[in-house]
Image (cartoon, rainbow, N blue to C red; front, top):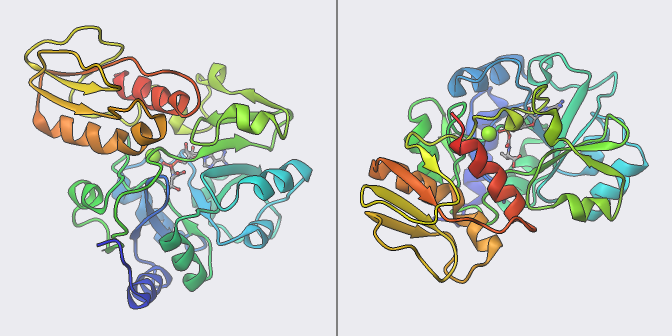
Length: 312
Ligand code: TXA
Ligand code: MG
């Protein structure tokens, strides 16, 4: 299932070059990819997701050289990419005048969000297709992000031309987004690379307070929403509720329980987050009660996604 042949990569790349949509795994979540330089292909991403057109897309690149052909790199961009690329870090940068990425993908902005994913399948696809790939998470707009090929198939059935199945994503929450087009830099979305990590390298402020003017829809309060209502920081649970637990001590009485990490490991919890929310959502309980999760390290990104999933 997770072994992908060179033939599959070549097939997926040919589909992308032909303007089709290809879902592919990254280390964070599955992306719904299209040739970022092709307006028609990019338009079909918005159509498949039912995505509001004012939400710009991330362009994925094979390496920093490819990124530097699209955006203006300053010293901060260079140091951050040296430290974290390839990896779960997206940079918002001023676009170059000769940027080839579709204006539709950029939603007319003069900045571009660039990410160089580390997952081997994503790297192989980017190397083979030889153009930036525009890819939001491969889910309908506002729904849970997919961390398996099956999630993509369930949500976008018939709307995506090909799905590369690379098995479950290792990180499980979307990339950290840092806006370097402003000074000081702003954290637009928390992820596996934390603000504390980045603050050791550059000056950065938290963008949380800016949620009323979202630059990233990850900042819209209701996002990543399951159909079942979520109840956070639960200290008890009802028999008609599902429970999303964390750590060794699990509340009694839920109709069904998934434990993000019985050992209390935040990386394991992040990797399980969307898959368990998907599974509990399908169960159709009255609500999903969620145990409190520590807010340090990856816990910050997990709690960010949970707060948005709970808002409606
Ligand atoms: O981990 C990830 O980042 C995944 C995988 C597939 O790479 N992608 C992902 O894409 O989460 P998406 O479209 O669901 O989220 C992209 C975020 C959005 O919140 C969007 O508003 C923001 O990036 N974004 C894109 N271009 C931007 C720009 N020029 N300025 C500010 N935010 C931007
Ligand atoms: Mg998304």
